[in-house]
Amino acid sequence: MRAMVLTANSGIDTKPLRFAAFPDPEPGPGEVLIRVGACAACRTDLQICEGDVRPRMLPVIPGHQVAGRIEAVGPGVDDWAEGDRAGLTWLAGTCGECAFCLSGRENLCEQARFTGWDRHGGFAELVSAWADVVVPLPEGPADRDLAPLLCGGVIGFRALRVAGITPGARVGLFGFGASALQAIQVARHMGCRIAVATRSDAERARALSLGAEWAGGYDEPPPFPLDLVVTFAPAGEVVAHAVRALDRGGTVAINAIRLDRLPEMDYSDLWWERSIRSVANVTRQDARDYLELAAAIPVVTAVEEHALPDANRALQRIATGEVEGAAVIIP
Image (cartoon, rainbow, N blue to C red):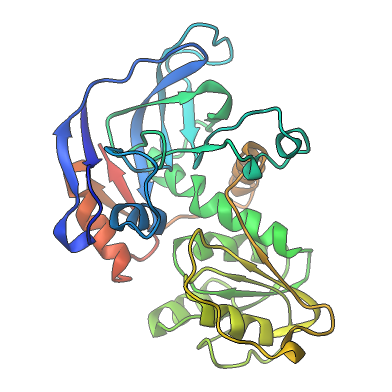
């Protein structure tokens, strides 16, 4: 098969992904083989390539937002058949036996494996996966439109849950990239008042067009206190601004796999039971719940397509903030 393979970490400007022929994976016991129709790219893929998030194996094929169809099933797989529409998320497998797994918090499993990090991902024509982590996708929408739901959408949805979203809540979205573009649609669907903070004038205008009541800079206080804020930018200073925007009892959820240093904060900013939480990975149930909700809303994804050999260029555009919506790799 053809794939974009990472053999060593380096800056994205050096094009660290190499277009190469790679052995076709074969599904083992309990596994399925997916023919990739589309794989969305995100900042985590960029961080894995550059080494900010160290890959757990090299060489590795990145990509963890896969939409496609089952090509083959391995021994012992009864729930999937050739031709079924299937999606693959960041979560590639868990132990299924620890306290976290048994309490519905498999995203915290210490033995969890992750697609495109310590198991080959979807920047390829084919990808193998454990059958029990693959999620069914609806017929109808194109693969390119479903792929961005499977990381940016699901993790944004989980972040809103972690932050405690309720119908009518006052919601802040600090950062307005691909994940926030889906989160705002969820918040609007729930009748929330929405404030968006971002550096980009174009993103502020887009946020207002999508239903935000206010859009401004990170250091500008919103015109109303917020019950919850999800931060999407990988910058610690944004978290500090978000905390200061909270009402009493409010929560900031940090939606990032990596964050630079948090600045000093005055305890008075946190007092009155304000809290900061991190968001780590997703569960299979998150994916199922979000796909059902996204279909009901329906969530609309803005997409720019890139051919498989152009995956480096897609990540370069993510790095510079040029992507409006989601960059999607088409094998």
